[in-house]
Image (cartoon, rainbow, N blue to C red; front, side, top):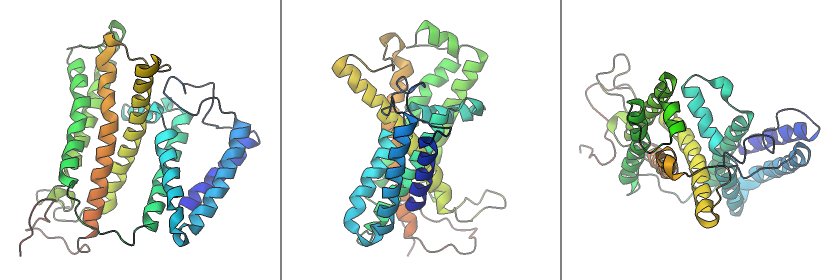
Length: 322
């Protein structure tokens, strides 16, 4: 799959190199203000570079299963695609979709989503190459990390819930006016509810209902939860949060060292507006680790059989009856 992604990227790069539309990087957009690294790129040279990298990626992906030492290339590629290319616009696009404004999603965010997909595919290819000596099971840290991932969204949701209720604190007059409108309050409530819901669903990674649906659910009770139904959404959220979190912390570090964070403002009068966003990085990292631990645990379970209505599959930390 990494080879297919690289081939598609090479085709896109060729399109941009010959003057085609849709180039998602470079100047003329909000790249600097949103914390992007790849600023100032031009479609022609950048498109040619993407073609070269795409062709190289095809070769590496095809020989990777036979050359385990090349998995470092896979991991480096994944790191660049997941941590360097994305900026805050990818998470902003998710927020716009949540409130029904898909028309506001920028082309750059679509390109970053594509790069994030490639990062996941390359990480999977690199991990598959070195999987022979891995032992599926529950890592000792899985429960603690999952609980941390479930708690992180509360730090993000708390101030937004208070703002929606009219208790504005830690924000400047302009932000106060924005969140005090009916649209602003609805937006903050949607963001807070999405964060809390995500935290509750994260608990399913260590609870019995995360592997087998509870008996009180009509029609679906007792059925096994498909592994992908938990891992795919959780991985996507972890990738988006981690990319945006790296952007925020990179800008904050630059502000601390050089008193300049580009166009990302860390105003003291508006501290609550950006301080909550610093949770994105630990939230994304812990959610990614929790999802990986869940995937490993599910790999050790027996294949799905007929639904069982009177028994629950044990979650992490619960004992199976002997």
